[in-house]
Length: 409
Image 1 (cartoon, rainbow, N blue to C red):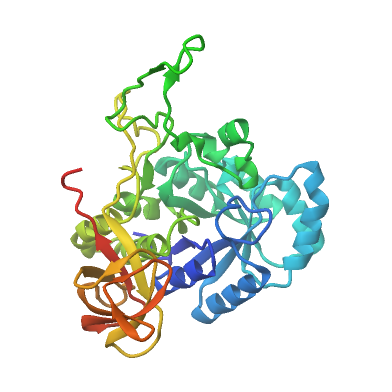
Image 2 (cartoon, rainbow, N blue to C red):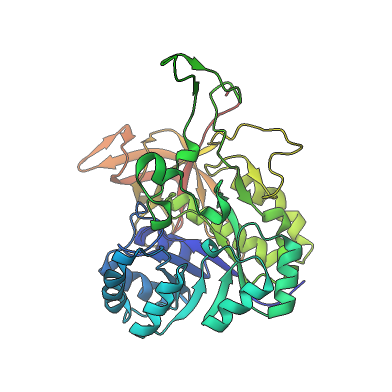
C-alpha cells in the first residue's frame, strides 16, 4: 500500500459547508464564487466569504481550490478577465479549470496558484495528461470513465498528480458534458446551470393521442430512465490508492452540511486505515454511514452499473434526515444552542455524529426540553436557533440527524 498522504477533497457550496467539511477532516476544499463555476445554484461564496473561508482553511492547514471551470463563449472573455483580476489576490492554493481559454486568461492576469484540470476535459490517457502538464497543470482530475488499470498506467507513464471522483452523483453524459438541460429548459450545464432533467420522471405519449400517456415500466413509482446511480468507491479505495491516486474527490456542493461532513469523515477515516487490518474492521460502519445520507443506489463500476443489460430503478434512498448542529462553542454540556434545518421534537431521540479523530464519538441523544425566547416549546421549527436540553453532555461540532423508518416503504 502506498504510504504517501492521500487528500480528501470535499465540496463547499457555501461558507457554512466549508467550515464543516474542514472540521470533519477535509484536506482540500473546492468552492466557487459568483461567476464562472459549474454550480450556479450552489449558493456559492461572496467576495467576503471567499476571503473568510480561505483564512479559515489556512489556519486549519487545509488547502483551497477555487473553481473557474465554466466553458467560455466569446462574449464571456472580457468578463472573465475582469473577474480573474478581482480574485487573483485572494490567495487560494489552486484553481480548477476546464477551458484552455480560461487557462490563458489566468496566466495573462498573473494568478499565482496551482492549476488543476477539471474532469470535464475527459482525460483518459497518458498522452493527454502529458499535454496538460506541459500546458501548466499540476494536478489532473481524470474523467470518471477512467478505470483502475488505466489510472495505474497513466501514473506510471507520467508521474502526474492524479485526482479522481470517489463519491456522489454521476451524469448520463460523457464526463458530465450534457446538453439536456440547455435543450429542455435553456440552462447550460457547461456554464453551471444544470437543471438535472435526467432525474425527471417521464411518460411516453404518441403525438396524435395527446394526453394519452403510455407507461414506461421501471418501478412502481415511475421511471428515471436516464438517471444514473451514485458513485461509491469506498470498498475499492485500496485499489485506487495502489494505482497511484493522490486525491479522492467527493461530489456535492449543492447538498447539505450533513452530507459534506459525513462523507468527508468516512472517506478520511477509510484512507487512514487503508492497507491495514482495520480497513475491513471498519468497513461495515463506513458503509452503514454512507447509507444514512440521501443517495441513489450506489455503484462501484461506472461501466457496468446496469448489470447484464438489465435496468434497475434509481429512486432516492433517504434513511436519515439532517436535523441540526450545535452552533455554540464551549465545553461538553447537556444544554447547548443548536441551529435547526428540519423540525425537532421534545422527547425524540436523535443521532449525534462527530469528526473521527482518535475514536468514534457518535452517540444517541434524547431531547428533554426545547427553549425559545422566554419559554419552553414542544417543537423546534427549521432554520431557527434554540437552546436545547439533552439527556447527556453534547460535545462541540456535533451534527444531529433523525433516523427514518423505511422498513415499510
